[in-house]
Image (tube, rainbow, N blue to C red; front, side, top):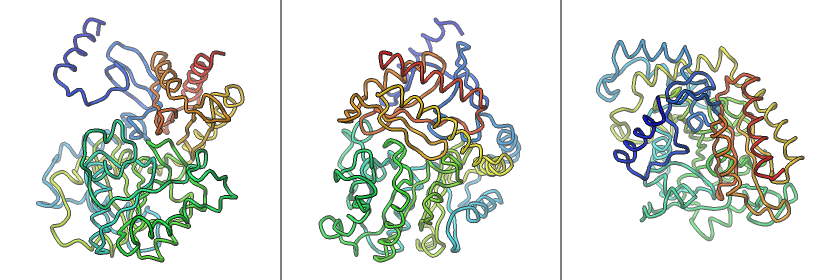
Length: 436
């Protein structure tokens, strides 16, 4: 496609698509395979974005493509609420088996991560007969009315879209690099976790709290990893007060952190767990898995939706889980993470612009700061680095409350050579942005 054709396509996009839909760059995709994407003008890109954490098993994974084609040839939709099919049940059985927790489990399927979170709140409220929902600073849970309310960052997610849903309360997360209490781990004694008890006195009573919803590693908020003991404290407080603990694993799930689910790093099982993104291998699919007694709390007919658990999406997800097992994707994520972290830490020694390297497995981030002592966020520099990456063949994303964090969401099937190439582009961009 010529530059003139590309310009015409951009003009058509501007005329036909609402301006509120953002685009990370001006390119149009033509094809993708594994960890590589080609634009319509023939340019190749390494993918460190993965469709925002969706392509853990890689673009156009052959096993996933074959499963989609086979199911699509049989039937594409009947609605599980109208006519049941085995794929839905088989996938539910598989997730019940794989999800952490030594208790009977059940599953429902929806279309998106936001829907899984909405349904988790519905389950918790139905089960506890309470209304309150506790979430955290820097959380991201979706863009629907309820999940937008639960999301922390105002711009671009919430600005101008109020009023918001009631009975949602927020407290600081364990963001140790920027501790809300001005303390240092471990001498802080996990003040941020124990603060829940004071929160019940000042903000919402424990007796009116249905659930606490947390990402094991915050995604859009900046790949923030709490101390290992953090969720153990949250679990104890939930148990003490009869509060449902919800783990939002939409971005962290399916091996991204080096384990199938990130909560496994903390040795804690949530009562309910949401997953989506990489579960469908590129197709829309979300799953809510949890304790059977909680999942069965809503009345018959209280759950469902026209497309939830679409048969083609379920077939794709079953193939994804086969790839996870057959290719030992958790081990691959660990290796990708070890290689990338080693390079990032070496970069941090050369470039003071990197304030912190953090993450679990292949879910890694660089927090960019203008001054290591004051930790002044380097949001503009992060944007320049992302732009440099795009111009030089690497799809990259920034995130965080200040937009100053570079994150890695590459397909876990990426080769060592591809990973090295992508990290090299980041380092060259850092040198340019740092003025070195």
